[in-house]
Amino acid sequence: MKFVAEIDIMPHKELLDPQGKAVVNNLGHLDLDGISDVRIGRHVHMALDAATEDEARQKVETACQKLLANMIVETYTYQISQQ
Image 1 (cartoon, rainbow, N blue to C red):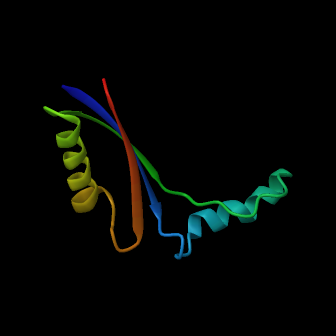
Image 2 (tube, rainbow, N blue to C red):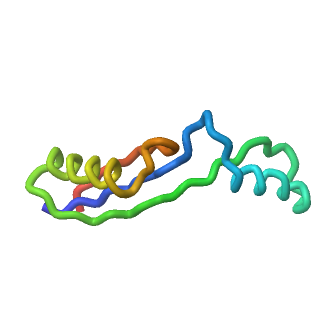
């Protein structure tokens, strides 16, 4: 079966996000007031083949933990749907 995983990778909330800080600091120059926090991460769209949804989840977990996310400074969430 074919599955699609939508994966979001973000820095841990406890860590400083320099890119997000730079965006927040510059939003005022665009007359966008009232925005106090921006966190910048990555979004990964993954198409995969697996016999079951559990197998697809295992593949996504392995990819995230071993390649896509730096587990020391990042966290990830994902959703899987059948295509």
